[in-house]
Length: 211
Picture 1 (cartoon, rainbow, N blue to C red):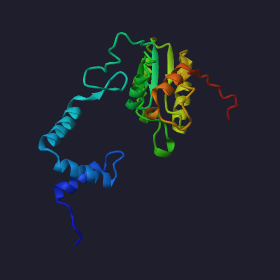
Picture 2 (cartoon, one colour; picture 1 turned 30 degrees about the horizontal axis):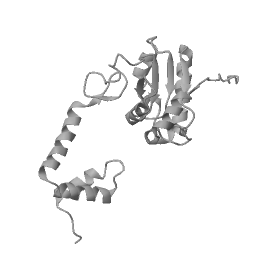
Picture 3 (tube, one colour; picture 1 turned 135 degrees about the vertical axis):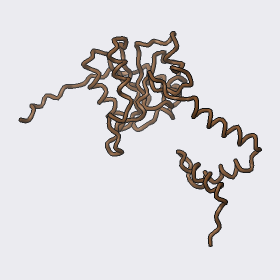
Picture 4 (cartoon, one colour; picture 1 turned 90 degrees about the vertical axis):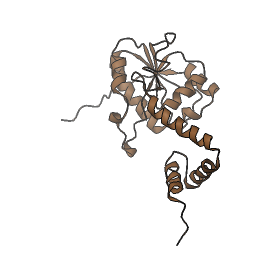
């Protein structure tokens, strides 16, 4: 019979291997480290995990993470609330903020439209986005979805929905390579992309409707 780890250890390895970027071998190494680390270090990690699950939630306005009623960006009176930057994930906000070149507010979609993965518009955080756009306080929307096929499709879909509202729509441009990811872009590249954003114009489909 093949050797098996004690059940609690095997359970820990299995749970760790479910985390993004951790395969079975990496999960095993991490489990072994936690098992041999000082007891207070493992206890601190367990408490940190428990605390973040208890207190951190999505901001009801933008979808960012917060432990307060609203996130620090939405509640900052110094931010330009008329300038709205749409991103796919919370990690993209961190990347954008590191550039120190954007003083508006954000909206987190929670992903991008991807029919092949079964992700349609209904899976994104669009309800609160619609409410914000119809409030009359937004003068410009910056599409900062990733320059991937899914990100571009999402930006185009949203642009078509937003255009009838008369709000200026722009797209981050120079410096971001096609197929890239905001979370891995450096600050200088993102700052250039923000400053060089281009306005999006949506062409109406002129083809005659089929009877």
